[in-house]
Length: 385
Image 1 (cartoon, one colour):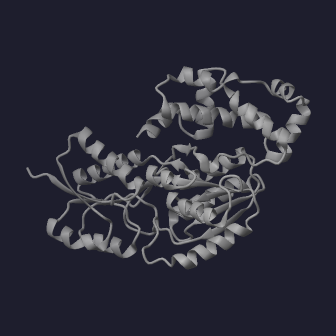
Image 2 (cartoon, one colour):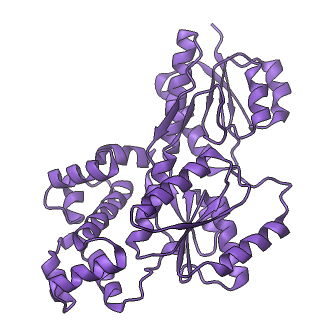
């Protein structure tokens, strides 16, 4: 019996696509599938080769509508792994983009920011959803977002007018109220922002804090300073896309055009966001002390005593400056510490709970599930993929 011919039209220039490819290959290996792969860029120039090879299934990173229409002619199951275009007759497996925006909003608010901005595409569906999640979460705390758009779909087109783009970005950055926290639609536009700030003499992160999405190691390390980014569950996306394709090949039925969303992994801190945006010296002291001592699970009263404040004054300071309570800020710090330990260590959950300042493993698990919408064990599995 001949192997099933599977075309992987992802390209490997983006870290996101390399991660998805890894998940696809892991799934095929784990299931011992007799799949023969051909890989290539998701571009019209591969169509002629595909016509000769006659694939039986396709997994693709589709961000061009004409290319999508060309793929339809093959009459085989097609799985798309980017929510860039709407109204395509293919299932989409991608990250939960609304949740990406919400994570970014919470992350910046925890650092004390009051000025927020978004930079990305206003046509790509993934970018619009990330912006919407960012805006909605900030609106819940009476914050607004200043947005600026450029055609990153999901990477810059080669025919872009860089001079015109740089001019519009520069004007926007200069007039933003500072300090400001900017979420970029992904790492490529984030790196462009950082480069423009450097040309303008705008300090990152002292004046502008920049957060990307994808956690592409090369992009983050090429950025000056190194770029903080929201890591995505790329391997899990590749595995789920492979599952759907496998089921379609077995059933000999086209999969329905559903959107399957997988939760993001979380923020990976680097220098581009290594700044607290507070003008109140006492509040900055409080934030740093809490973050540095979160494993001790200090009470609000203990924190107030360390800072030579009354508990009431401390609570008022947090509400006025951050719009949150001391306890709520502590919980977010505990979760961020726990997520870092889940990603980077093999510690059991009870040890992670203790090192993150939770009173018990059960309290840790319940809080994590309530606020992150999945248990910590699942988060660890996704983060490691």
